[in-house]
Image (cartoon, rainbow, N blue to C red; front, side):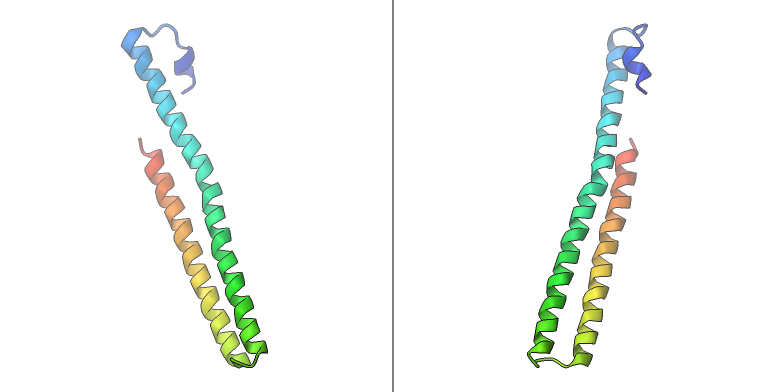
Length: 103
């Protein structure tokens, strides 16, 4: 692809078309490279919510407002929700990568 930039035998509109295609493709590649970074940031936020929820549940159990069994059940529910949303983020990344790579 980069060869199009250095191919000076092309003239006029043809050269412009090749350079435009290259820049278009490079723009998509940059998006695909940054996409996992943003996805990881989103997953970190989901995990932070999980951590906060589990800390609050532990405090409720410590204060005697919920039982140990309830704590376990609620922690399991929080973990299932965390897994669900991390999975959604992962599937959105895969979907977006496919969309971006199809020119």
